[in-house]
Image 1 (tube, rainbow, N blue to C red):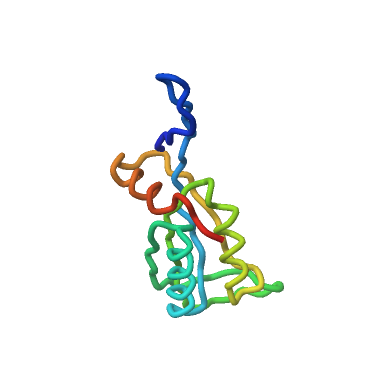
Image 2: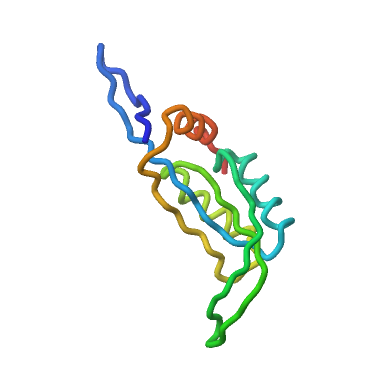
Length: 124
């Protein structure tokens, strides 16, 4: 977690907490995961994405399914999550895409600062 100065009042600053998130989303293909991750990076909604092949088992319309997928592990801040979720849903091929976030309770200060700097001033 990093504190970002909001307003300077005399010699004091009012700080806003910056909570880092690990956002997970699965995709049907590696190309789709890469395309969406690149768009999210360009919009500064994420600092980075790791794309990993995985085998997914899930229930869909009352039946058990199994598919190879690609999961994107994306780093961002909590303030970017609403825009990030909206952007993923708009570009995703699934009817019900997985978009979930895990709050990061511990991270190196330098890494947290980097994620925050990469995702500040995100665009639509």
